[in-house]
Length: 178
Image (cartoon, rainbow, N blue to C red):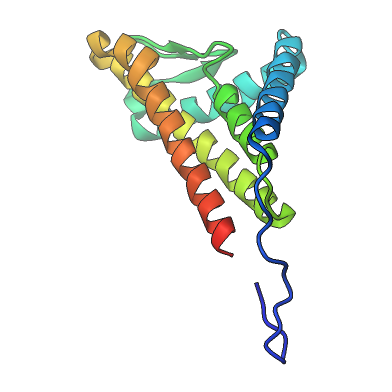
């Protein structure tokens, strides 16, 4: 918000939130459409771009940079390495959490600039957190397999969703104060 010379404010006061039914309908509708579209992209160049190029290759590069002796390399949807690698399947690339965030931003009344900036930063956050999750799973599988299932199915997905929910709350709260 900026002020004009006479002390006048050049932005409007915060708008009232959408009614609960509309918020829920927007959230569920946007999430469902995104999930459907992602399902339609299965076994296409889009899926290969997201999983192979944007998820597996950066994760394998980080493993190689952190532990060159692991000799990790990306092979299609897998990080291959002597002593154990990791398969990145559809659902492991973080798209569901991205879809939740997109649906959340679509379901709230917010200035379009704040919405776009908040969404863009949130998607970067999800990418970074998901890459950290993949690294944790890679090293857990190689070094402490008894932890792998717990981390993969419970702990790390919950941490990812909680972190993104807190991020969304912070952006929403900040937009209401502006």
